[in-house]
Length: 209
Image: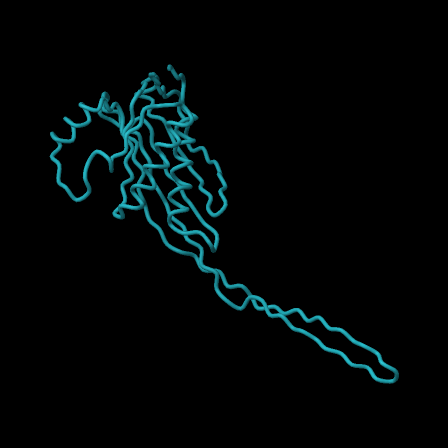
């Protein structure tokens, strides 16, 4: 079975918001007009992160999006090139040729941090009263909320699709991801990877199987 992804049109400065349970991502992307109409049937995905777990997560999400949405052939960098091992440009090119890779989709960090928001302290009191003859007895309960900081992670990302035939970037995107107080960096990377694939696939002109 063969699948081809064709890029078309120029998508400039478009913003979209995708919400997940813990993180959301805004993305802007653009197609290189010099490669409009170019098709790619096999893509290598690369999560360019210093942490191996982050790399593997990014590549898993990128490949899942490509294969599930368009049944496109996808190869993960972490399964082809061993981490920490040095490869020459010639070795990399030879390996990609052997695999029939036509394009490389990369996702990488462009900065990250946390934002802190103070939640003011509030209280709520409830009470009960009981009358027995001329005697009134009662009790009350006070619950206090807030009075602490809430830290939320954020991260910026860059994504691009490199055409090996044209030797230039065919598609480029920048993304900003933010999470709630329960989110972690895995949530941000997953959100960014899913959004990157979704935006890339919105540039599909044709799919051949």
